[in-house]
Length: 106
Image (tube, rainbow, N blue to C red; front, side, top):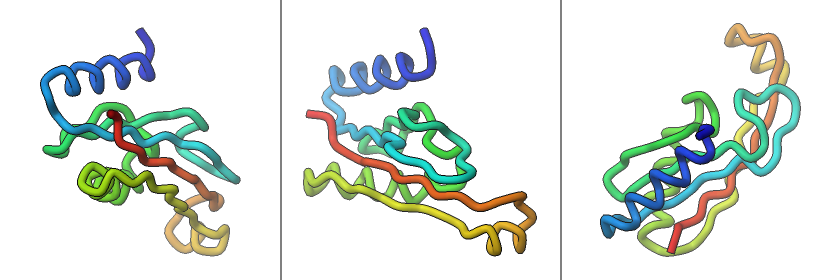
């Protein structure tokens, strides 16, 4: 079982228990990105998580948007990024962008 299977199996188990859940999926990247397109993060209504879309750097914001999506039922397309100049200022070799789709699972 790979990581994506773990995310989907866990989200399915949470749904079977009656929990509200959302899945965040990396849909586009430019430049440096910690996770490739297709990487997923499952989130339940209590904030439990499985998987990863960023290695931690943007996941707090993604979890907040997932919880909002579980309330209003609306998907969200999120953009995160850092320029090459900003990357150098914080000690990274280069910048990059990542686009994440957050949607509830019915």
